[in-house]
Length: 296
Image 1: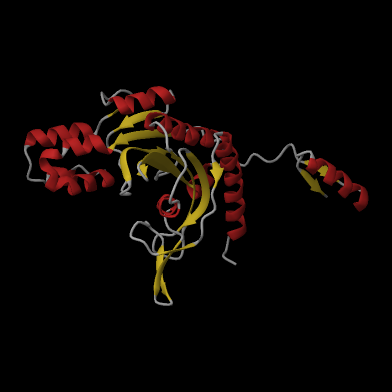
Image 2: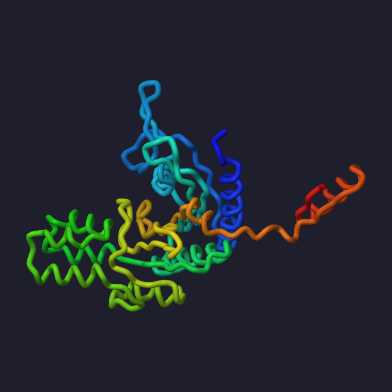
């Protein structure tokens, strides 16, 4: 057994319990996906291997796995998952997230962001902020320099404007990109993002055009969640298209959440002791009523 496995498992279980409760309160239902998929160029992350002349992927990115598996989605679909995701190796990252397929993008984005916000609050994590950005704004800003778009996105992912500064483009264009790169506020002039901020109405949500995510299925709006207590995002997500339908989703890094989560204990758990026959009869009665028990 790996050292610390039981403690790690207990922490993830506690975090998962609060996340499941919040996701279900928002109307999402859990989906269970296979650990191994036949290789497809549409699957992201995961660890590849060969078996019986075929190629497979272990524990790929969940959003891409959902897109690969659901062939004919209903008009509206709300799913959540808790799963480990590999990234080419043997040790993975536990993730929990939701996918909302088939709805108005502004409303889906607002609901998904609020799902993330209320999930963090349920865990007792109050000190965080959410940055929402736009790929379309950058596509329009780099339309005249499309040949350098890859370098611009690399600069955004790395938060390193020096990469853009070295490009053979005009000073005027660099100034325009610099202003976008550093924009952070509540109102941007891009109505789509402004409407999302208005709908969410949370003081911890900001528009940040420097926020991008590298996964290729995102179409425009995306966001990341940060805490000043950690040096990496707690999670993030964005807008994509699924079988011609608009969709929006996000995923938490459960390992990051477990570092910030303060155990609350279960004060409502009924402790029982006494003769086995009487104790277990009472325990069965309470469990049937939905009351948690502990037989001492």
